[in-house]
Image (cartoon, rainbow, N blue to C red; front, side):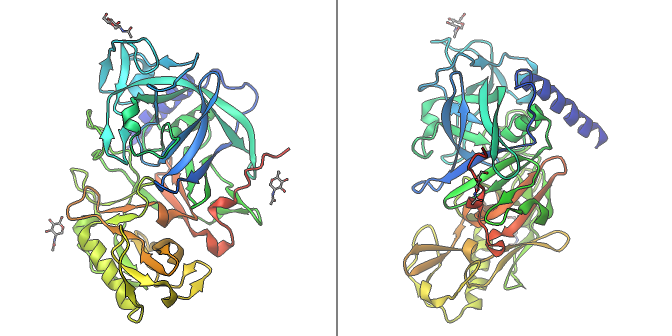
Length: 432
Ligand SMILES: *[C@@H]1O[C@H](CO)[C@@H](O)[C@H](O)[C@H]1NC(C)=O
Ligand SMILES: *[C@@H]1O[C@H](CO)[C@@H](O)[C@H](O)[C@H]1NC(C)=O
Ligand SMILES: *[C@@H]1O[C@H](CO)[C@@H](O)[C@H](O)[C@H]1NC(C)=O
């Protein structure tokens, strides 16, 4: 244990020296903020950074478990500060790079000789390709707790270059993916190292405009400037030792964030589940992970069926109506009253160790697909999926979820609607 945490410290400080030299000298931010929007047709959560010289806005799909950030270098990448990462360099070693690349047709962004390679992965279309690892300037806004503040930049932000075909399935206008996963080169690791702030980030998804915070709280929301970082409940993050998506060439661990769901209850009544499915096995299969590229929580078939059955049993009088894909259970919307936290339906709890629960209320369990139709917003993942439960975007909207990498724990707020705010209530107006 001691040895591995020392190693982590060592590599974190290494990264610090690599990415920090030309950041602005005087101002050191305590936290950064990125805006989020939701793309109506793909249901992806989109953020925007500025990158390159001269700086241009670059839209990226948020992938909370993504191992690195990647952008399309084939189409329209123009920058005087682009630098390929050489093979066997310290930066390359941080990236778990499997190979050294050469390229015919260059030199140009994405095509240089003797460069460090990675496999950028599209977790929406499940595609991966080989790509050159590179560094370029990235600029984002810091925050003074309540508003966005001074713009800061990381001069050697590491990312992977992808070819244009890997953009398939990404929302229109998006140029790549922001990878926030559990790696040394993910966006949160690089920002924390560059500005020496705590290795934490928080995601607040919204069906309109959400926010990502890098660094520690306060995470302040209007209308009453409530600090949500003070009211988080924590559960340990679990490291899956085997990467199960993308290309695992060096036996690296998964970059996804897993939590130890031990059971599910509906109206506080336990649902009978096959517990074997709930833990991660040696091959990396099973367990529960968090994803922002899956729009609705996906459950292995037997878990899905048991939860749906338990839910229906609690509301015997609610008329069922024809289903609307991808859902399997829909109701006449008039059957339910409304509450502060959405349609008044039985609550679904994900049970976690030490009697902690992640409680899912109507706003997060139900999806309004038409005026008069509400569907239970979970999706059948089939038999033998790689991961038994993938907690998706809809279930996290208007809940603040904090990833505390140093303490290896996940903090979550439950529904912000209870506190009369939402994830779209961060004040993005820059203070004068
Ligand atoms: C890489 O090296 C090969 C062989 O020496 C050469 O043909 C090619 O043009 C070089 N590519 C770049 C991008 O420099
Ligand atoms: C529970 O799931 C495991 C893993 O898929 C499977 O091997 C086992 O047969 C299942 N047990 C029952 C009782 O269905
Ligand atoms: C948002 O922040 C700006 C800048 O500090 C401030 O002028 C404005 O009043 C804030 N909005 C609300 C609703 O408090």
